[in-house]
Image (cartoon, rainbow, N blue to C red; front, side):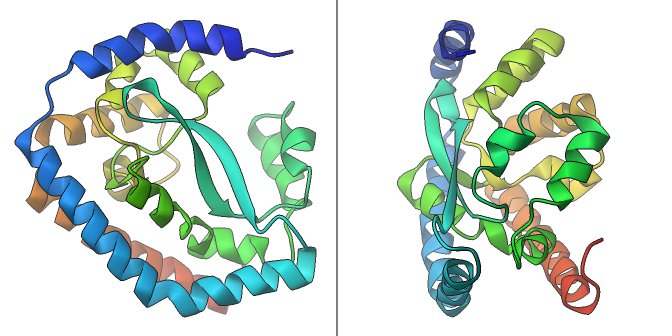
Length: 226
């Protein structure tokens, strides 16, 4: 079933609301920081990026990247990039499943290095290109699929306000509460970021994310996720 017409209808109204929201001067400064840091991170991570890409190519073939449709600022759809961590066609096979069954079935779909890439979050390195293009920010609400956005807006009416800013490679909600938080709690933290966003808060969130990713990377090397 093609649910794109429904998604487009639901998103149209929220797109208008997001575009009517006032952009802060801070957002210009944050965009400059996004471009500056993304370029630095890409240069620093170039050896790892090339090595990961070659390993994926040799061990599981093409495609190297996963491209997933997400809802961006003001409701504009874009293709979010990641290193592919699942076998080819896994998204179609996993599509009908949710919750614990989805988690269990996903384990069987990992590529040779896919589990490690996800644990260390190195699979998200290509999103730096999304940041440079302006699809994303380094800090913001995490990207969401269009059909899930439509569902969550119905459950949480304030959810549309996430469209006021670009989705982020890292999020205020994830730094503060982790990945096991309910959607309502995550939304509360996302809205706090949107309301209080500043250069200082942006830098603190990046620093906290760096510490967290470093810890996960070290654990990923020592003990792979089951």
